Amino acid sequence: MWNGFIGQRIAASAKAFRWWAIALFLVAALMSAAWTKTALNLMHGPKRLDEAALGAISDPTPPSRDYATVQGTDPTPTGYAEVTTETNDAGIVQSKRTTADYMVLFVGKRALLVKVVPGNKATTYTGTIVPFPSDVKAKLASDLADDPKTLADFLPVMLDATDDYGDGIVPVGIFVIGLVAAGLWTLIKSKKYRENPESHPICKGLSQYGSLYTLVPEIDEESKTAGVVGGATITRNWIICGRTVMRRDEIVWAYKKRTKHSVNFIPTGTTFAMVVRDTRGKLIEIANSEQNVDSHLMGWAEQMPWVVFGYDSKREKLYRKQRAGFVGVVSERKTAVQVGRS
Image (cartoon, rainbow, N blue to C red; front, side, top):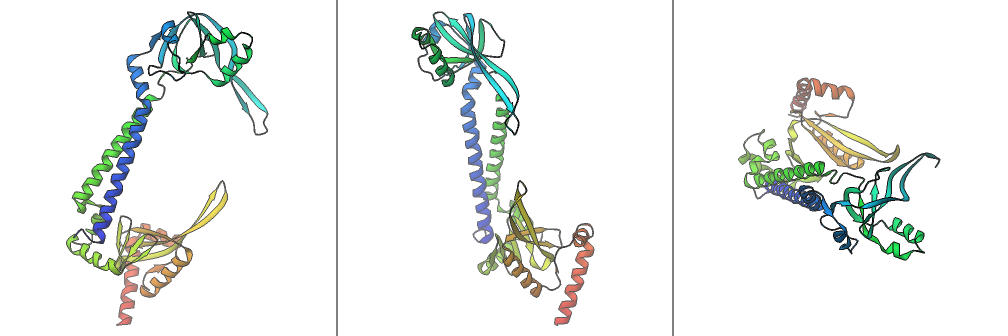
């Protein structure tokens, strides 16, 4: 029973859910890996680095324990600062503000560059061990060109004491938990659809019309000669689009939908769709070219002349608020057409 058209759609849906679950778990794993070092450092607290520990850092790549407290002597401003400049559309400077200063802290015989909040002059700083900024390094090399020994005394890393270490880890952790939860939910859905096809939305929609054991084989058989229009499968008696199933003999209204698209108020094109509504309040929107939409609507108008074709706001209001009356009018028209044909 589940090897035909309906079963294949359910299997494809279950497979898509499984791949989505894998993708969600992968993103969660990558984000967790990126923040693992930060989380471990926060758990252990800042590591106190002395002259020997700092002197042992010969590679500018930050160590795994990059959350550190350093105590030194003679904190000296370098004169370098990080400045944020705001300009208007004409390029005229509106404001300037110093967002960070660079200090030199002497730890034993070595000089450590420390990025600090403006005005924060101290002998002990806590922050993140980061690579020595290339622009500051170049400026130092230029200014100390006549004093290579002093330049050589600088450590290849810097302590950034401007931000709270691990700032942002809480929202990231919540986001990762959300990704894992979504992945688990998606995986459970995939398993459920594979093991219990009757739980799939297509089957739930079909069950409104009768027994699945009768309807599924019927649609499987009709699908062999069905047409595909804009992603919707149209058989002799059914329309299946995505997870929505609709009986063709319950269609009461169909019309063309035109959607104009733009980016920054610049038109980028127009798309078209055939909108179909039935006695139960279901809506199926089938995207296609304007020519194909018009062609299908004309064909349906000949096959089902009792159906209301064309859109206007009064019909929309009547269908939404007085659908029973709308359906009753269509039913009377259908009866009249069938009597006239007999």
